[in-house]
Image (cartoon, rainbow over all chains, first blue to last red; front, side, top):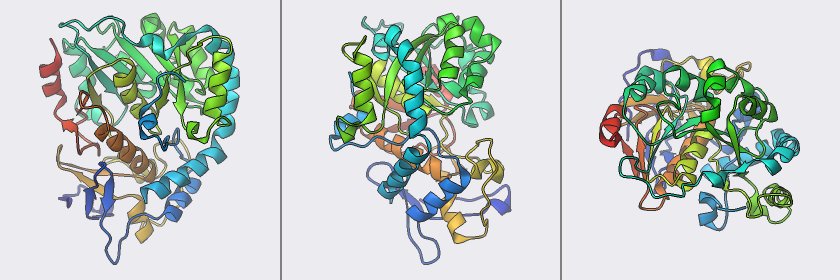
Length: 73
Length: 321
């Protein structure tokens, strides 16, 4: 998918990265020479700088059905 | 890469919020022992034909104002559940979407950070509180919960899952034992938050309220092109925006712009929304086949497999009986 970027404000023309969805609906960005997808280091640096971490971490489990919730805990 | 980002977030949450979660749980425990379980909200009767199993989750994303969704809803004949994210509660009531008109009215609150009391501190919440059912995580901000409680909102408790996988020494499992020590012998529901209250509300809609159709409005998980960079780079928090080099390739990677082909709009992600939106979309794709998720936000980045996108007015036409 490639954005049809008709910008209201050209100063916001930041990242016309090619993007697509993988098999679990996650956005993946196609890598090019100039612009690769975000690295874990860049991500962490931003979160630390911004102080805006959000609410919670996502719960992951080896038992994938548990990730969808536990009826009685 | 998504897995690496999740690992980064896990590390940061432990550093920044873990103490808060424990503290809030300690302060909430006495009330948890005397109040209701989120599982008490599971419907006991089969849904009637005129009241089908449908929930609308209301977030506070910008498209809700842009498309007058609350006004549309207030005028509709929708008879299902209203599931309001805490941050959207007051504006929802102000728009005339009240429990008087929509008796199956719920509010969801999961966050531990202080400052959420503003979401409940309002005369309209006091007016309608005793008709609103609230679901709160055991680590949610006690001050906010007190204001909700004093406004008449009936409190129901849930565990926000985050470290259950780490076994008996995990906070999720230790706190569950403590909750069951006095009341709630069968425990409380453990909900996946997906990192935020919007995703928790979506889970609440189908897992607890047993809705077969869950519609989303105001769940953008992204920014409009017209939003200011200060707002985008601080994720909308009232904090000093971080100093970032807007011209750097790294900046481009942190704030990619996405074209949403369903609603034909552009949207800017920040790293936190990337983290949230990927999770919500993944979980939607993994729901049981009888669950339908309709995104009627008319903006944002939530689209993909098993996400039915439509205008909210179309949704209301189809699901108001």
